[in-house]
Length: 482
Ligand code: AMP
Ligand code: ZN
Image (cartoon, rainbow, N blue to C red; front, side, top):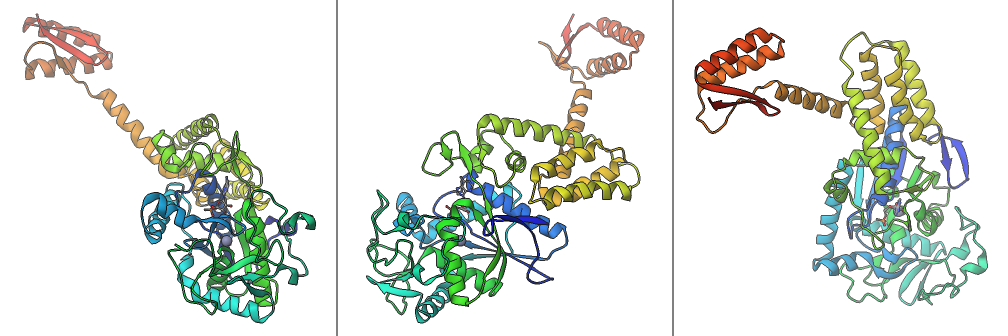
């Protein structure tokens, strides 16, 4: 499988460090609010990567953090604490907010068929681990204390910028406008490992540490959580593209300084979901959540299909019109799968040929739009329906579109509609219901359906003899007193 590695800017053959396991780490949500569908695009594409690795036979251990402390409104350790902001907004404690939005996040993931990672670790669980890493970094000369906080000294590194080439002068302290500078920093990009002195005297969650009571910086959480569950090396680290700098850059800096060797081999970054006005965010424009899509009548899996239709390294523009199109495509797709009958032997040769196409798409840096095309190839292929159903069920373990499940529901719905169309409901208009007349009216409609018009006419005449007239309406036969 070839995967684009943001760290090398190359499409590379994916070779895990250990033959028996792929170690995968994904930056998780900051649980101060609902995830918007842009955030979920990142998790959705990471889910595809994980499932595809499993599809091609790897054992995967995937770890995700839940950021419930330390993430400030600016990723560069400036601004307000996001969790505190959430707690204040809702008049709740930070931990109440964290629990509520963690649950909401996983409920959204479930609706989008995003698998829960093998390990989910709230950042507040591993404070001792971060303290240990920070102590080691200070011992090794990478950490310094200034103004009560502990900082990472980026000037100690041979190479700090992994993902982007910045002009050094742009990064000197005090050059960016509109951001209050932290004058404790020796270098512009030094970052906080541990806060004790901050603007947030009302910080809710604090722990004792060798540097005083305080809380960890955001970046150290991901290094600590990854190392705790995956050890000293990592195969793939994922996140949205905005995480590359400074968050992932800082993760690499501190992890490799701490370990004394290379940490992670492949970096996968998912491009943004944009609106017509730019990057989707929680504070700008309509706050688009999975619940909102549902309220408006969309199937969350139509959004999943919408994401799969474009490559994860391209920005994707969201509009209601685009989502309408995806919903239409999804409905048609399900109808096509529903039309397949469980018939015929499974043709292994055909199944292999179809699977090869599917794999070729995803082996090519997760080309999900071609993988979706592979579904249509299955539907068009000259083979038995059972072969098609087997191929679709197999592909869907990666694509997660519920193709088979939804097709079964569709078939049941169609059956119900047909049954409803077949039931004859006789309407008695301004007269009391009469069982005998009702039975005769039903028999007449059945005769008409069977094109036995003679019998239908005979029944109409008999009904008339008994003092009733019959009139056909779209709702069924209507009976009145003659
Ligand atoms: P946060 O909860 O803010 O830490 O973000 C969660 C994840 O969503 C991170 O991996 C971000 O990089 C990613 N993300 C944020 N905004 C977008 C967007 N508009 N499109 C795609 N991914 C995003
Ligand atoms: Zn992270």
